[in-house]
Length: 160
Image (cartoon, rainbow, N blue to C red; front, side, top):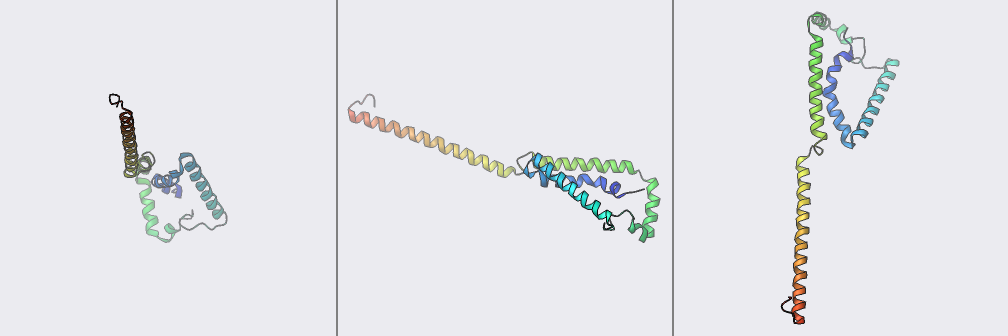
């Protein structure tokens, strides 16, 4: 017996990556909490809709599409016993988690996924440090020149 959960379960990892990326922009803890709040809210909404019989036909458990199209029901009934469903589901499941982990890992752990922007910030900081050190060298040089001029004006040419 196929259920909506069994059919959509293997696709969950493919949706989890972008969903987590969307919520992880505010931080890991805040993102996870926000994502859980949304999941609980949507699950509650679906439960209320099921209670009042207002669930869309494609989410319902009456399989209206299969009842209306006899050939689809026949195909589903013939394929169900011969297909290696558990292996296919596991393959899609693990592939989905691998793709989602790669997407989330690439976006979350390398500076918000903006390497060029990060390198630009580093370059700006290095330029600022160089300007400060240049200014410090020029200030020391000007101070030494002023001391030399002052000592020269006092007649102490050897100290200058």
